[in-house]
Image 1 (cartoon, rainbow, N blue to C red):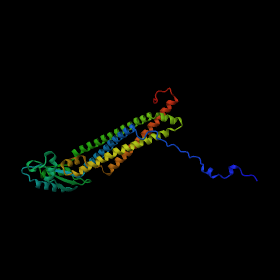
Image 2 (cartoon, rainbow, N blue to C red):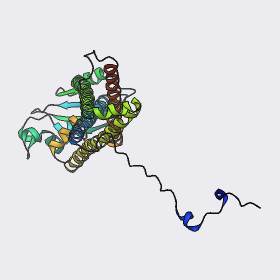
Image 3 (tube, rainbow, N blue to C red):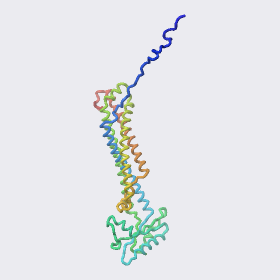
Image 4 (cartoon, helix red, strand yellow):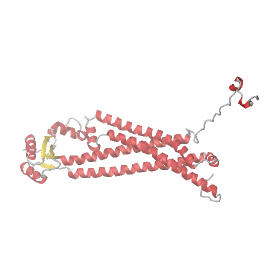
Length: 337
């Protein structure tokens, strides 16, 4: 009986211990270095632009809310002004004017602005410790009206003039309309500044991407030579600039959010001062609210995506120019080596 071939024999213990050494793949390095001078500079630029964009967005949001508040005040409040006179009992005239205004259909309530409140309104211009008896300062009565069914202002103005000659009715429409128009113009200017910031950021990313591609042109050419697709190279550049833009936009957005939070905290701590009251009446509160912070976060994401898309398109365009120049070396409108 013949023995089985040697290949079918059982392996000896020594042979079983001998195994083929495992192949280890050398770890690949990114096409672009994770951090260099160009990347750090671009990160700083994106941080500054993100801060300016978020600051502009918050300012536009504040102005819009202030304009909406002004428009709302037009529709719900009017003011009766009574000038002082030697033969006039001011307190009695204030009460009479308030009662006359409340007789009209469409009025809700009336409030007499006392001497202390009037002095606070004049304190930024005339200083503290103002005695209204020494100056001919008019007194005010604020009437709250129904927004959907306002009273007859002409009839109210005529009745007040007949009963109290020193009284005049002011519905604030003339000067508040001008302020609202100014606020709308400010919103348009802020929107234009925001677009300019985004445009400058796109141009910065384009030049930075081209610079990074020029510095690594030999790597791109080798990858093309071995058969790497353009999308692969573009994806590597896209990842690189996505990390840079996320870091830069996060820093800039965080600084803008900290600025609004600090300004809002400072304003809330100084509400009792006349300067803050006047600034609040003109510009509104410096707090942007939950929607404002959500807008800052959205701006950060938009900046990161915009930077990434711009980098990808720039790389694809540059690689196309390289391929065009390689296919026709006589052309001189491609990328210079």
